[in-house]
Image (cartoon, rainbow, N blue to C red):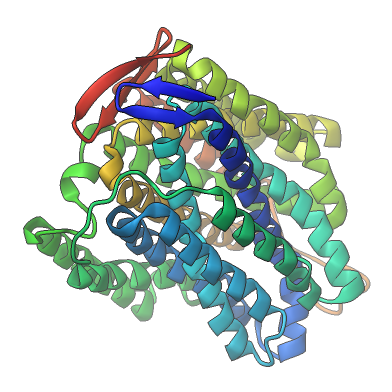
Length: 492
């Protein structure tokens, strides 16, 4: 079945097939990434390294991925988004395969870096959805993609713990490798090349300036909880990064084909969404850190659950996300993205405010119910944000716009755990456990109050920020920016 539109025809049969590929994709990524978390102590023991060193397994992936998302997004605009999507997915698949066979820690870091090159798959997938799917279908598909991130996390945490405990950490990657290969084959066979290309020469100086601006800052944030926020190396890295940001800005202003078009990312809706998604990622990661401790600390400091049990207890939140995300996408063209974003942010803020006051006093059922409400609010806001972005940017630069959005998201995700770790190291008590010869640090109620309270303020700020969004859909009509101008599409 073909659906005619002002600027072309959309193949509904293809859209439904392609939807399965892009919706299942987050399950692969969250499966491989979330399963790594319970495996870190085992990796540390096998390679004989310290906790600071093993954290680089996560850091190197984030460093490479943050830069590659922006660069491959730009290349997708220039040479075709499917082509670059397959390149990114190919790197990701290769990294997953190599990780399980790493003979040393340094080889593991190299293969994790290769895997990080694949982080560009999501901005490119968002771009393909926007270009090749009928406009009325886009919000629902974006919502389903967002929901699958949460579902993948819930599946991967307990499964990762089980696989690591029974078969070893390498099997977390061995078990994911066939899935990754299958996804590559499906994407290659099913997806079509984007209809818009914007040929040109890659802005290599801009890419180098981007590395200069981003990498030192991410390393500084990652290392700061260990070496100190005021340590010379931390301040020096931040200083180097600031100079890099200035150099990147000055270069991109004069570049003929800039890596990051400043006129696009600084326009109203993209600027609001990028800033918002960065703060949202910061708030989510802080909340997740606090949740992990509360679930796993022994009573009376927590619920004393294993990683497997903790993952299962988050199933209600994943279920609600599966319902809320596509439902939001369905309602969005009629209600509007802006009201849903504000509602979601306020819901999350209210739930986090309650957690800041009562987290350690709640029963297990009450705690799970409250984080489920917070998860629903966050999902509602995230789905709204991504749809505001993709309908506010012309398709010819969609890859770089969504790539820049991933850059901001990753930056926020890096700050969250770093700040959370600092807070928990500030507000703690020493507890003696019979099986352990030395006392261990347990976060106090004040730590949870600060973490959840800060996250609540973040989402309150996001609700206020959302007021500035220029609405892109309402009353059954979607207002979209095209290469040739702007138009309205009536939802059937």
